[in-house]
Image 1: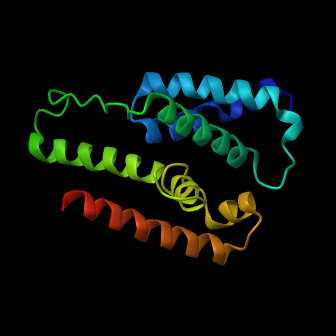
Image 2: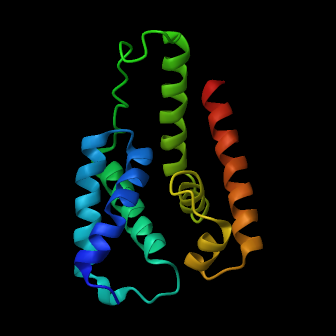
Amino acid sequence: MEKFEDIYEKYYRKVYLFLLKLSGDSSHAEELTQDTLFKAFLHIDQYEGRSSLYTWLCTIAKNNWLAEIKRKKEFVDTGMDPEINSGMNVENEVLDRHMAELIRKEIAHLPEPYGSVCAMKIYAELTYREIAAEFQKSESWAKMTFFRGKTMLMERIVSSFL
């Protein structure tokens, strides 16, 4: 096993980007990344090597994010600044941001393992093989679970507009 200092340097940015996609807020992602890596440091002896270290870290990160959402019972504002992209159509940007926030919210409410698989595929950009390894299942299971989760997600989003 690598020294934890090496793990921290190797995975900090990847975990941060994963959490940034989940939370939509850079300072929130920074705080969650620090907490994730601290928890990983405390529990590194529990890493069994059945999945990649990055997948294990993303699982800790996702669980931290979900726990915080449950604690606060709110979702983080995406912090849209219409002046940043002054050449873009502001209405489209607002709709895109709203849809991204809605997707984050609905993924958090999907039953397990669908929520975790969708988050790993969409935000962590893990392969089906990596997802399957995390759950100790087959790649076919990972593909089918993602498909079903994505279908549930679409149904939830459509019903929120009705």
